Length: 333
Image 1 (tube, rainbow, N blue to C red):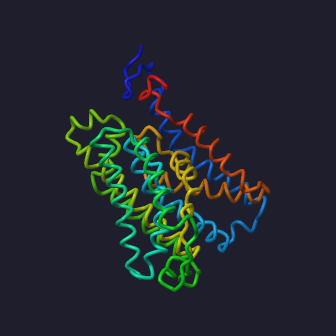
Image 2: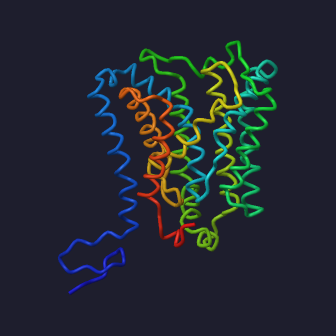
Image 3: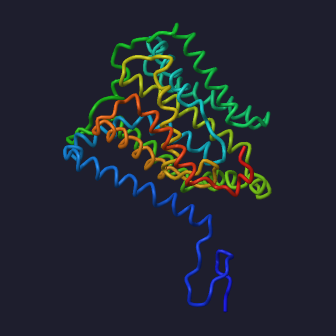
């Protein structure tokens, strides 16, 4: 005798309910990143016991800050079924603007550059929503535009920054000597977590990513939510540019360009589905830690840093292959 379980599948009496394909995929997205992170940390700790010392841990976390800020914003766009390929180029442009404007604006350069990033995101989001152009194409074009602006504004050269205006981005705080950048990134993550937990934003993003027509029928403000996701992504890119200038004391038109692939890799490896509708800030944190620890592991293993992009590319393909929701893609083009 069989009955219908809560998942809509049939099971015999006395047997546990069977997991649907969607449930299995979500379970994989939830559990696998944590296992991978734990395995990486254990492997590196065995190879180099100094890795688990507080100073080493703070150094690793500090190196992950720009990636964490960029991935936090880009995650919102992916969660609603889009993608933002312009975040790294926008961060590079922001670094150039910081270097150019800091002699004039002083500490006000931070909110001004973050606002510029938000406006860039607003422009991309509006084009995507109003003109109905795929986010992939809009942000790919944006990548070229922001890179071009950075090249023109900087004269295709690195611009040095002097003074103590951005010292707060790269100092140590308290008796444990915690890097200030780590505290700033943690505060950003907490703000994201609070907004996604105590407001309807996460429900809107997930419903849009799961099925945009159904979200429209349910009364979700689809257009406003998608544009807002791009605005936040742009603002985060602007702030990441500020943080990069704070630690390099320079702005350059390609300063953050190498972070694009790690950003996408961190979001996907952390368990946010590239097709949207599943994920969150906690998974993004795990993904950023995986990518950061993996970079440390490659260094410990003696792998040349020029091979990192190859590993990230393979990692993205593997993660997408394992976690993609194929029910949304009946045809692969």
